[in-house]
Amino acid sequence: MKQIALILACVFAFMATSCGSLSKSKSYSFDEVRLEMGMNDLDYLGEAEISVEYTSYLGIFKSIEKVNGEVYNPVHKKTLTMPKSCRFRNRNLDAAAYKLVEQYPDAVYFQIVFETKNKDKLFLGSVNKETAKVRAYKLKK
Image (tube, rainbow, N blue to C red):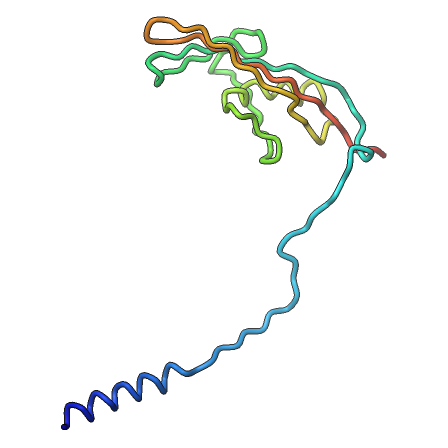
């Protein structure tokens, strides 16, 4: 009998302590800010084509040979990381994207028109060439 009373007392104490409420007040704040722009707000600067040529062996080892038609030197490499809204499907084109900023330094928006990939298979490897055509825009004044 004492055990049942002890169990009922514990259950009642547990129920009484779990019936609390919590209130929180927070001032009104924005979680996200969005700027809506159309093509009428942008000036077209031009179009550029970037390319990367590399060899791949066993699907694991990769060696970049040419970037934008020039022999690639890994000691003096230039890279440009594009924002999330304008990412290349293939990360290898990031090595060639610096040409966009050099060619159009006033550009604030880049639009990827298309990407192509050519692959020549070799024994236990392949020679790959990836190209992308990108349009550059700046804001109208």
